[in-house]
Each structure stands twice: as structure tokens, then as C-alpha cells.
Length: 379
Image (cartoon, rainbow, N blue to C red; front, side, top):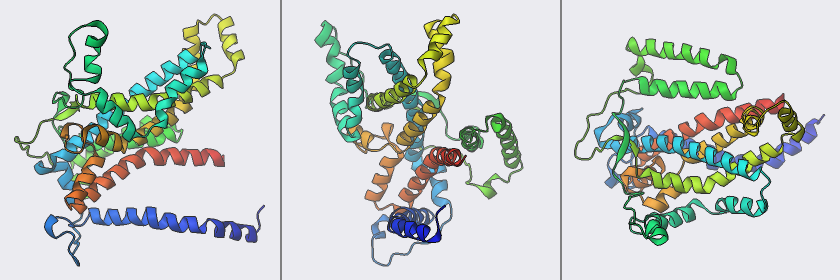
């Protein structure tokens, strides 16, 4: 047991770090939250003048992001982040497990292959973006490989400049279903990571019914953002969905992070007792069944950790997109890019609102995971 003196000394030792954390993290988060509900930057020409007033406007900035026809770019960025997260996670987990499976076969030169697969992790996203920007040029890189290797006609695919859109949909189609989906996803994620799986879907169903009743009764706009469907500006609106230009970004991100997922899965596989596998084989399991019924179930915690880490990266992705496509390519824009554009044009309140939306999205992923880990440590 520690006495009071030991506790006081420990507190004094970490006090400088706590002060710095409070100032440079939580204070600035608070400032950003305040700016996001102000009108700072409504007139960009006077935003940086001395003594400019910042008036409280409530949730107007968030309402504008979600519903204004002039702010369609945020909704495109939000949709891009959603699709990027889905395909990035799926590709990294699939490729990472496949590489781990191959290396687990005790191939000759395993250390060399492991180093090659992990090498992209040593690069920053800026370097990765620059490399893949060269490789995905419309008239070079991957497009000319068929001609170089086989003498065939070169490809003409626009990896990061295509204007094609798949899975097209209308924003707020179905009204409150958009917010309902976010609420249910957050609740399901929280209960799952809190290891209350037997209660998860029951409480999700209850939450869904409650939210539906609130919306049907007309009370939704009194407790959350109005969910108006924006009037579309045909001159600038190109549609919401999966922009094919995201394919190049996803390929580059997967190339960099798949090796990391491979290392996680390989460590998990090697941590499973060989005797357990042999017992399964003796009982008549094929090698495929050993992986399906013995190894994969024991890799769930590792898979969850990988999903949390990759999800955090995908939600705040910025540098890779900036290096590959710049800040003016709307088809691949993400919230981080919009923040930079807003700060550059002195739209401080709007950019702060975008930052808070990003923080909220990341919190949905990180906080339940940290809470679960802390609870597990205490137990």
C-alpha cells in the first residue's frame, strides 16, 4: 500500500504533464467547441481584425453543414470518409490475414518477406502519397504496365481523377434514418466493446424504437439538429456515393497498413498452442477447418484492436489525401481537407464545427475501446 507521502510525490511528478495536457489538449478542444457555435468567420474579410466579436449562434453551423445547399462539400467529405473507412478496413484485414496465413506456413526466407511487408510502415503518409501519386498518373505508372510487360494497350483509368460515382444516394433520404443509423451504430459499438454482447442487440432495438417514436411525434428537432433535406444546387452538386477516385487513395492506404495488420495477426497465430492445432488435426479437422474453428475465433481480440486502430486512422485521414490529390479535388475530399480550406479562407466557425464532428466520430471508436481496456485491467 502507498502512503500519502508516496501519492503526493507521484502526483507532483506527473503534475507538469497534466498541466501541459490540460492546456494544449483539453483547453484547445474547449476553444474549438466554442468557436464551432459562434459566428466567427461569417464575414471572412473581417474575421482577423482586432476586437472582432464572436457571437453565440447555437447549432447553426452544424445545421448548415448537414443541410445547406452551399455546404454540399462537407457532406461529400463525410460520405467519402464513410466509404473509405469501410473499404480500407476490409482490405487491410483481408490482406493482412492472408499474408499472416502465408507466413505461418513456415516459408523459406520468412524474415525477408516479413521485413518487406512491414517496410511501408516505416514511411509517413506524405511519402506514401507522393509515391502512389506517381504510380497512379493517368499516363504513367500502373496504367502503362500492360504495355511494358506484355506489349498490350495501356490502361486509361483515372485512379484519383475519375468522376464516376457508385452506390449513389440522396442525402437525408429517409429523413431521420441517417441520425438513427449513427445512434444505433454508436450504441452497438459501445455495448459490443464493453463485452455485453448478450444485451447489445436487445438494447439497440429498444433504442431504435424510442428514437423512432420521438421522431414520429415531431420532437426530434427540439433535442438535436434539424434534419432537413437540403435543396440541391445543380450547378455544383455531383451526387453522394462512392467516388471511384477514392480507389487510388484506398490502394495506397492499404499498401501502407496491411503489413501492420499482418504483424498483429501473425503474432496472434504464433501465440496459439501448436498442441491445440495438432489435437484438432487428430480429430479429423482439415487445415482449413483448423483456421476456421480454432485459430480465427482466438484472433477476435486482435481483429478488434486492428479495427479500432485502422478506424481511428481512416476517420482522421488527411496527409495521404493531401499528398495524392491536393485540396481542391472534391471527389476525394475528406473533413481534414475541409478544415484546412476553411482556415485558409478565414471561415473559423465552420472549420471548428468540422473539427468537432471529426472529434465526435473518433470518440465513438476510441472511448469505448479505452473504457473496456481500463475495466479489464481493473478486473
